[in-house]
Length: 407
Image 1 (cartoon, rainbow, N blue to C red):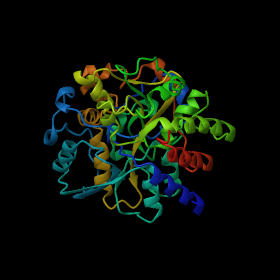
Image 2: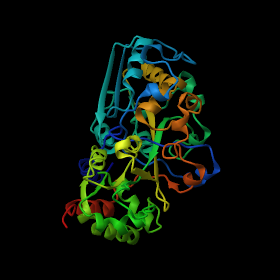
Image 3: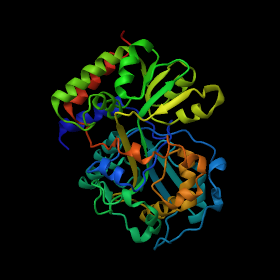
Image 4: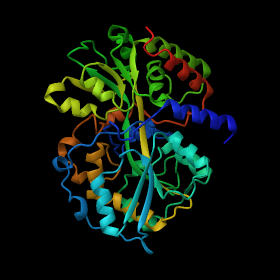
């Protein structure tokens, strides 16, 4: 990567502290023509993660050390250590303990990154051979492959990959299905406390129109890849546009919006919504659906905007020069054992790309359109390309942040 691109990456990394499982539910894909049309040659976009829910209430699965039997074995000796570099708290703790018990792993190191950019910057800085597995967002996989940061997965050692839905296979970020294993995915949308916000807000356009009325009571995630979606889709543009005039038009909307924003917050936005410090939000689903399901905050709604939004897909990869390659393959296979994967779905409240795992997810969750998106909604979703180093976006984002709350 050129030096100026590295500098831009570092700038963006500092601007967008994310926590993949800080506060997020998710939605899932069906193998539908609607999704394929929406996906085209695009990938999942990044977002933040979700607060855990009770697995006992929603998963008909064994817990911790009694996890389901494996459908296949990893050839070779399983090393007694596994080093993971991942979004914070992005694996169910009981599943980690079950994996350790099942394979005799005595040391499971879990280091965290705050964004895809931080992950890439760390690897570009020479941290090769330090970790075994990671979970980048899909559109970052090609860059990791091209820069030799990841290795091909030996899928003969990951037989549970057979459960991955066809929708997630052969997509542009890995057309030969060699470099990654799908993990889960989600969306970015509009959150409202409807006992306060009485207007109809079903689109990004309506979101910006009513924003001045609720000035100082609006929260947005601290993530340019997500925030840019709102003005671009409100204008009818692709969220991946590189057309300067379109980006500048979107920038004008953001700069007019900025003074009305209480805070950019990727970690505690749901708390602000819960206390009514904020009554509108540009958020992920994490933490929001818990508010919706709590009688005290049941007026909380999360909406996928009718003028479109993005979806993101996270993936498992094995890093180059992984010190424990057999343990890495064993983990990838283990985490997609259907009952284990279902537990991940409930804990992270992301939907799974594993079709067999859905049999162990409670029907109430499967029927929730905010989590498992209906086919007609899938057609309005757009995946993200990597726009993190676009200089126009970087400049707009810096100015936008400088005007937050400056009414």
